[in-house]
Length: 403
Ligand SMILES: *[C@@H]1O[C@H](CO)[C@@H](O)[C@H](O)[C@H]1NC(C)=O
Ligand SMILES: *[C@@H]1O[C@H](CO)[C@@H](O)[C@H](O)[C@H]1NC(C)=O
Ligand SMILES: *[C@@H]1O[C@H](CO)[C@@H](O)[C@H](O)[C@H]1NC(C)=O
Ligand SMILES: *[C@@H]1O[C@H](CO)[C@@H](O)[C@H](O)[C@H]1NC(C)=O
Ligand SMILES: *[C@@H]1O[C@H](CO)[C@@H](O)[C@H](O)[C@H]1NC(C)=O
Image 1: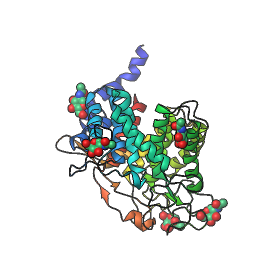
Image 2: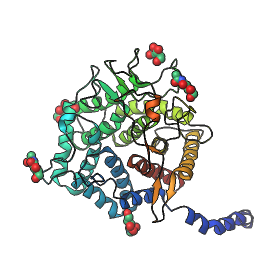
Image 3: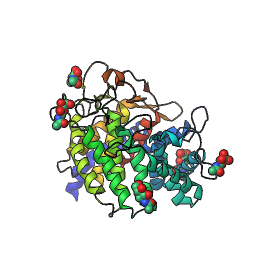
Image 4: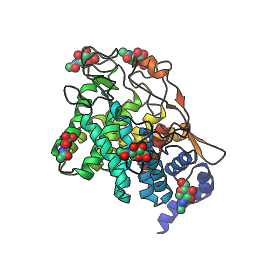
């Protein structure tokens, strides 16, 4: 007893002395700080900054984080904010309104669908189920490649993008789980969406600057200007595209029930290929990732914040839930390092008590050249919700690690 006290007292009193300093410099929860700051700015509430209804995947991403915080803290503010946000885009009769257009067959708006299902389950209000049914019928008519991959949008002829897996499959899984748990065709289809995307975009060993990661997308018809002649993939590994795909892997794994065919085994296999490669692709000094992962250190390339936050969320969650073993602890250690860099470099306290989040690239699309110069010339945002929401999620996982 005495021995233990003697050993621990100095450390303990040092901690006590530092405590006020530490708590002033760092909030108790960055997840809550990020959420409350975005709410204070009115972000992710189903409206554009001009107040028009918008059916937006980044709102869906943010609502996913708010739901986790609601479940963690019981703070009703988060639930009410989610519901008010969806009520801005779903009429009382269940029609989805705002900028949603069924006939665009875009997967992006579908990412708000998991929130509809959640609200239906929590409130029993039929309008949310009706709205979810609309997205489900969109998927029934979604154009597909010859192999069966959903096109990203009708106007992106034969193109599969990594982003689309997060936009479409998280909803597809949530819907099947809630309403069609015995639909073996749907489970096989979801499995195939992940697998086809992986097979068609994974860098092979002879690729220049091989990272073993996935290119942003591919064109099954090989006609897009950016399509490689051999496999039709786009030229670069873009950090956020892979971030969406990685988050979809862990979120779908968590939702998939035992009777979902080969879904779990397929996703586990893919995740266990990607997780160590994502760890190894981090810049050795900073611990975070280049915007264009395939061109480390090239002039104009930079460390981008949304992709990093997505990897931290996905890999910490993968280890926490036992999807990835991390026997030597190297994955968690790498995510800790990346998280500390993120907090020190990308979190900015504001005088009104909120925080801002910097260094998130505004867009990355395959509608032009899809090359290095394209990605590095896109604008970089402060408080871009795609990044803020990802930081909320990363912080949620990081804070679970500590507790
Ligand atoms: C719930 O969250 C809101 C902000 O989002 C905050 O203002 C409020 O104090 C929280 N309530 C509790 C009981 O923590
Ligand atoms: C649902 O309500 C909206 C708003 O009142 C209306 O514009 C729309 O036509 C309705 N849809 C159906 C299918 O009745
Ligand atoms: C099952 O899923 C498939 C594929 O999405 C769909 O075509 C079919 O309508 C679904 N079956 C039922 C009974 O809902
Ligand atoms: C691997 O990638 C290189 C470069 O993109 C390509 O030339 C080659 O055909 C690919 N090999 C296979 C087996 O896909
Ligand atoms: C490989 O990476 C280097 C260093 O970032 C870069 O300069 C070069 O352009 C890359 N090559 C290809 C083919 O991507």
